[in-house]
Length: 109
Image 1 (cartoon, helix red, strand yellow):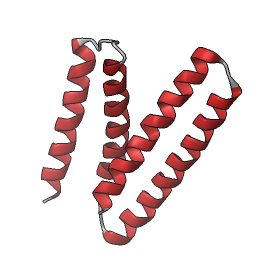
Image 2 (cartoon, rainbow, N blue to C red; image 1 turned 135 degrees about the vertical axis):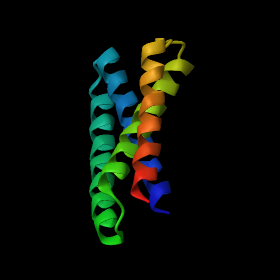
Image 3 (cartoon, one colour; image 1 turned 180 degrees about the vertical axis):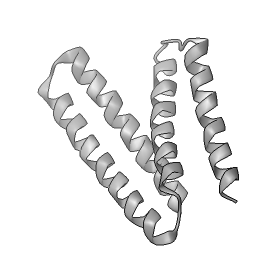
Image 4 (cartoon, rainbow, N blue to C red; image 1 turned 60 degrees about the horizontal axis):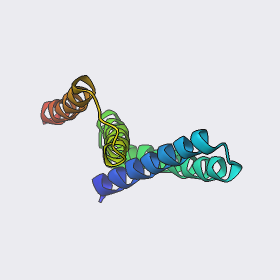
């Protein structure tokens, strides 16, 4: 359940990023307010992850890296859906980030 919550928080962060990007395109205050609320929910989720991670013994480094990775991954998928292509260097950065998480988790055991 903890890891599912982490993924959900990452998705919420990605949605907030996308909404804030929409505000930068349109300059409409409603998009800014929606983005601010999204980031408030995202940061609250991060606080809950930190609190729950400490109480259950999960390493916070991995939890926070997974949150940020989910955020970046879903924004990248959204950009790809919109037709914006990521460079091979950007895709390799995502692959290396996933590899880093695997290495961190394997090193934990």
